[in-house]
Length: 259
View 1 (cartoon, rainbow, N blue to C red):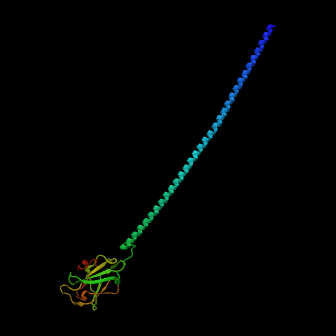
View 2: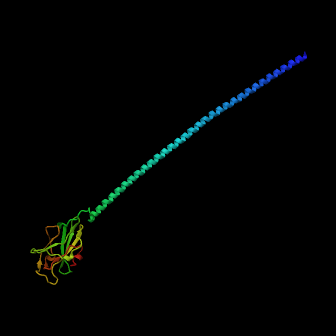
């Protein structure tokens, strides 16, 4: 009776212990399961937190690339603008160079025309006797000589070709002959206001001349003019004989009186 009760009591205790142990295991499992769930939630949270960060980084990188592209475009546009400015400046300088060259050619042509040189210069015409002042005067040396002076009064250059034609006295039948030894190497050119000279031998110094006599008038011809120009003689008259001669036009008085 006591042994059976004891065994039953022991069995009951064993079953109770087993139930307690099973309950403890269940609680442990429940706690462990809660811990895993928490880990998954943490992972999801971490994943959710990481995803926006990654997205932000990608957006930041994209924005940086876009900024670089924008800067590159601006640099390209600036370079194009700079190149355009340089091209425009170069064009202006080139145009300025062409205009400067054209102006230089025009100035050179003008100078050539003024100096009477160059193939494009206008030819210089003969002096107009009506625009030329002509005078004559006695000189002390050489003896029996006079000096003829012609001054260009026109507003343009002119030339005196050859020698002056002289007609002493109204009864003269021919012009005074020229001294061929006085012929210059070039035609005398006169700018406005300039003068040319011719020496006149009126008679032989030793008295060897023929048909001498005093004359009270002088007419002068110049090449290119048909009509003569009357010239007043110094003192009103001059003695002239067959030895009378005239030189070619000269650029200075000293040369004109050499013969």
